[in-house]
Image 1 (tube, rainbow, N blue to C red):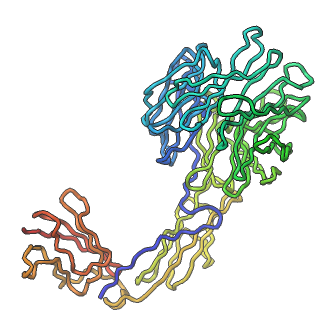
Image 2 (cartoon, rainbow, N blue to C red):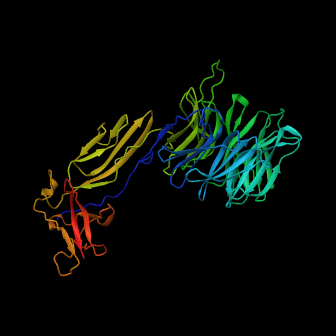
Image 3 (cartoon, rainbow, N blue to C red):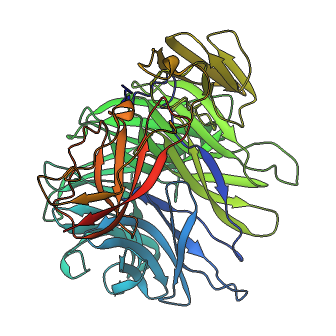
Length: 544
């Protein structure tokens, strides 16, 4: 009797999950496109927004692109609410996406889009927010922040808070600021305790006129300030991003103009107590733009590498990553040279435990956005894929680690892409590139089959195997069931209708199918078995 073996999916990797697809995608659009904000939706597609041009006019529009999980473009949309417009942020919504941007000179723009990128509703807040900066979900509503020029001094700004429903209908508007100070928001984050946290800039307490310090606000559900904190003092201090970490505290990144410009990372609790505040001095200087907490608790910052004290022409700027410990100490840096110059604007975790970045690159003529998907080890390379554990009666068993890896290291000592094994055991392969390592393991069990001389050699289906071609509903007939010969009993049986849909399947068929739930007609079957070199295919007619 044949035995059909069930395949158990068990994929292992020591450095990055096998099957991760890492990539670098650049796109050739007309004019200028930038990736300013990004989300991954429930279908594992990526939504990227920013500013873009879709013709030779040079007019900047709100730019939205949707890609699949591999970074391939699904659609691109441009929204033109004014003569000059761009997007600041995108969030998901029950029926699609919410885009926050600016429609200059009209005011802040909020658009509700369906999943195909069509605008279903929009609003411009020309009387409450002149320039929008950030938003977040807040209990089924949206909390939006931006700035408004002071009426008595065009050089000073106030922070504006706006709460709306998901369609942009205003619930309340609040202003935060003082007559003598310039204050602007950069990031807002809703908190489960109610209200939100906000980071921005203020000229308060800075010794130099028009130099900004960091402003941190804890705001309640009605938009009123619970507490306020100002950090800085001498140099220009600009915050860029704020996240909540898994321990319930908050981390924000800022750029300090002192010492030629350095990244500063600060951790605070919900009450504004500073837990640590650290300047990050690495081998490469840069301006930070985005931060994310990794699954292992470490922190990762992306931005752009800056080279100082060079004579013209200015050297290119590259995407720069800082890896930090849970305590905010630098553990590594890495740059990615994309285009002729590039900057990372957003970094976030993905569903498959990878990281994805977007930003803007220059190709020497135009500027475009990019997508860079890497492992949490900051490596741009794919893992080998040995597949599921294997149980087979055929020997030898071929193992293939996949193409496009420059170096292979097998537990057998082989250094080739594929190997053949004749013994049961656990097999390991590692691949390497530019100091990065990926690996995968697979368990192989080779056993004896019960027929066909233990599967040694090549085996066609037996010529004397007779498969019935009729099934009737007569319980007393020999054709009441689809009965296959004993020599192939236990094979996998799959039955299809004439449209190709599966109507019956059994991994270990035991002659029990009568087609009782199907109408009369012709159906098609496939019988497969580990000990056969090819499947048995045919047709069977059900007669009622």
